[in-house]
Picture 1 (cartoon, rainbow, N blue to C red):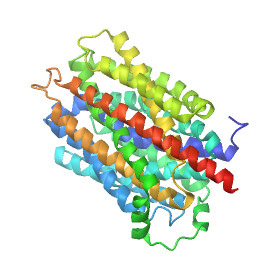
Picture 2 (cartoon, helix red, strand yellow):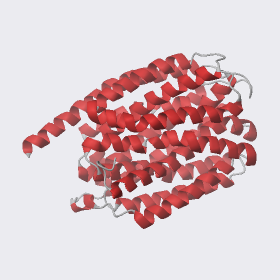
Picture 3 (tube, rainbow, N blue to C red):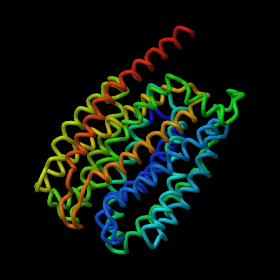
Picture 4 (cartoon, one colour):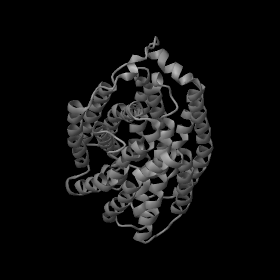
Length: 411
């Protein structure tokens, strides 16, 4: 790594990875807390799905509103503004006494937190060349695995010991530390401001939305979000009530699968740089579809088998995320990069929020301890969406190659 990246670039990768960790943990911690929150707040699976999707839908709205301004300011300042709002929203989550106030707090958190990922990806695209971007995405996407290895088990431990509010307190403390490090050590990211644009914020938003080449990427993103958002919010309940795994074993399950995913993340990124990002995306999609089809139809299952299945499923999902993120980063021109990333993130959040809400309507649970019904239907929807996405990402892949060839010819 030192041979490829400078010390400052290593810092950027590290701080963006930890920042992503806090954002993802804030979202992901709700999934395993579902088994605690549903009985604690006396809510239905559909209401819990609304709590999860409220964040995503709010994030989608804010992403669209922020897109027009995304290329008008120093990205460091944009990052700090939205990260501050995210921390404030998480404070509200830590203080929420009931379902309705928790729902409101999730909306506030989503309004700010949903934009942060797109700003981070814009910074990566500004600072790192395409040839190493898969590696960078691999390290940053380790945040997903890290949230499992450290965040989710710790969050579950805190929730079990001091109540479901305590994981949000942990996230606030960690986020404050990250914010200080960004303020002190990150340099301004403003090279995109040198490319003058006469468009105002509204024109910039609609011009970016109107680009046919960008629309293809947005369409692919719509389906990319389906898998995780449909299955993950109910995964802990399915694991406990359908697969027969004890709630106390969830921490170990997330820890083991997270360790494997953390190890594989950088390797997947390096692999995507060497053999091709689209090839890795296809391999990850095939692995995901096979495992999801098997997993969603399981009944009572030994713990070791659940761990093995989860490891393969998360490796497949990580392969899709890392390769698609690196590929998508090559789509926009520099002057549209921030707006494209914001809109793309917004579409991902909105489609994911809708998917979560629909999943909450499809899944049925007659009592708090009874098995989830219709979970297999969610698996079939995910497989169908994955098949279509493979074809759509091929179009993006060809578009990126053609754009690179035209750039070489012009230069």
